[in-house]
Length: 281
Image (cartoon, rainbow, N blue to C red; front, side):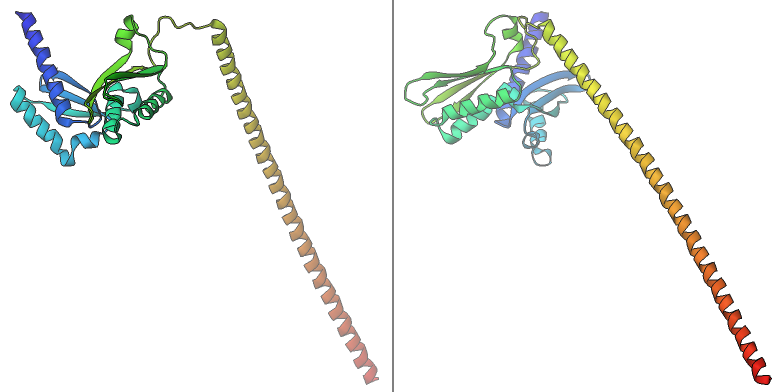
């Protein structure tokens, strides 16, 4: 039957995903995707810490490909690493962070850990978020704690397909604690979202006014630059004219000095001649 083939194929993919998550541990894994190509199976691992997943000189990747070949009979598995851009909008990474902090600091500071995680999620641009912590926290009796913020749908198609969810566990001294994280992403299409036309018109007008202001500022900057260039050219012309006048004045003064010196020499020679004539007489 064809149905059994597809069921076995999906079952094998699920086992590969669980094996990869368990072997790599808490290395900030977001998801494990499997794609079948003519060259072999392509396994894409999305993580927030790709260096830790790859290992020194790619040791972890080589070991993982070798184990996948042996355990799951894969012909040519190709493991690729993709980095998660926004860590706080990924529920699996957020849940792993909460689990690590609970195991490190204990259950006494669980409220601060939950509220800090919610604040980081909302600051990253999420429309809503919810974190549910269930287990023996902080007493010996099991109890559920809920921290939520923003808008989060609980039913309908948006809640099934649009909202991101993830669950994980933390091993504490009192026992196992379950962590469930739900996030409403900022790019979700909400059916009941109301958009008022007046707001749209006002936004368009505001954008048009901003563009006009920008154009005016650009024109004023251009005019100021042209004025500054014309002013500089005028100043340059004035300075050149002053230099020419100074050169002419210096030439005139030099020629006047030369003429005065010549006339004084002539008068001296004339006086000397007259004195010589008077002595001869």
